[in-house]
Length: 107
Image 1: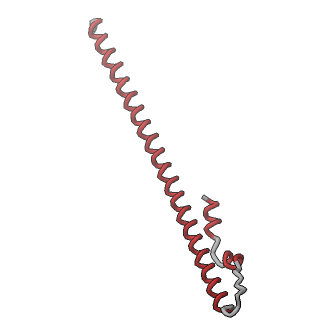
Image 2 (image 1 turned 180 degrees about the horizontal axis):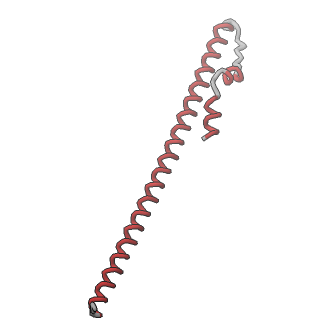
Image 3 (image 1 turned 60 degrees about the vertical axis):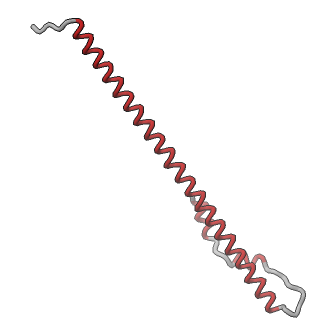
């Protein structure tokens, strides 16, 4: 029979325990890294969505402003002898595309 001393059994148990602790620490470290990567990825996606939404709103504001200026120029050209220049805001607003609103609401 093979006889293992108590001291040798203690050393083996200690090595096994240390190996388990090391393995658990690695798993915990990997889980933390994964969680941090997910949070970073989510933050990037949120930031990109905000930037996209802001760009769409800016583009819409520019289109609206250009439509208003166009309407004002048309009004001025047609009524340049009249002092009653009326701006049709509804017509200017309706002349720009509102598809961005549907897209933004889907985000």
